[in-house]
Length: 506
Image (cartoon, rainbow, N blue to C red; front, side, top):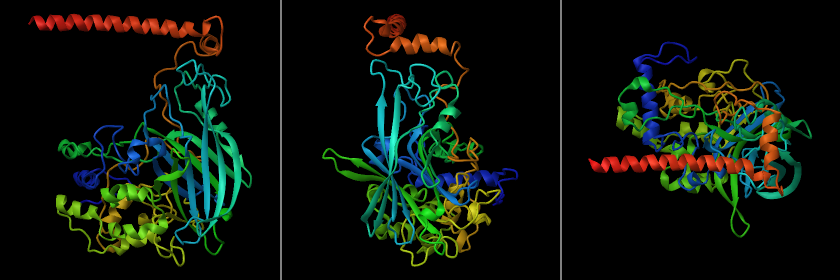
């Protein structure tokens, strides 16, 4: 098998395509679904039965890295709501109001979070007499034409042995960047994005809002392994989809135990309020792909409701993984010997001498050594390619975690050298060079800017929908639109009835 260039360069030979199909085939057999866009599963997109039905609470990915432009800070990014279709209006994508979105930080390796940054959201509606998300072009986050808005609070919880030591209100009523409806509605989305980047006390920064899904991979595998045509491998399944992101940049000395112990473990959770007002954890994510292809069906919902200090119950899923056996059965590539202690070290403890804290308790966390300086030119395979600032030492947006995880699972660290790949090596959009780093979301309207945008549209549309108008003018536009729609429906219905009568005649 011809190896794939570690740098991502070089010609894609048949061996490259086969390795891509092999990688995807292993994931497919392990339970990753990808029949159609919107029904696919990636990283932890729709990874467990219960959470797949409640996307507002579904945490898709977690990233943690030393900020490349501010190396004395650490950035954490957590994403929710998988497979947001950019044109999914008129009810676009909001964070849940009955949820607690938590970022946990374990700074001493005991599998317990010493710090929790908790985000809670509120939704605000200006005008209930319209179906529109925005009633005219939106120039700012406080624009009266932005009909549906959200704000959020941040609380910092400090804990010791899972007992609350203190709670501090870090931020209050910060605006969320809206869904990117399109050029006619949001002619300068970059401006809106920038307004949602908010400076906190102590040189911290926060952002919440829609973003391009930064995860990249090929998951089209169930059509008989690409329909038998291996040249089809290499399509980014998540291209064009958005997510809701929370990004938090913190001075590193605020989150580490000490300068002598710079390693932190990071994960995120979602708690949902029940009918009695009690919060229950429904989603959990640290390293990518764990609940996707490591945990079997019987453990997936249990994992989402569990905590890292309880991870001993899932140890067998790591030491005796299913994925290498499936690859061996399908492609006759021998699985590495068990028990897989190499996987325990990488994914539950951290790499010794790199991101393994002293006296570590094995637990599923994304571990980051904050003393490793950012790389000027990151390598997509991270530690496997000698770039110690990348995955599994934290996770940068550019890290190709599919290729890295597959190669490690197939024994890269125990002498079974391989170059498994899905042939998707980078995101479809370029990431930003400064906070919040994620790319802007794909717009719901992707065509040319609608004619006549500007004050005339604002006057015709925004002013025509002023709430509580008494002269009936607020219904004129809607009535006209409804009449046109009804006429069109009648025309189609008439034609369909004629077509049916004509076909019955034969």
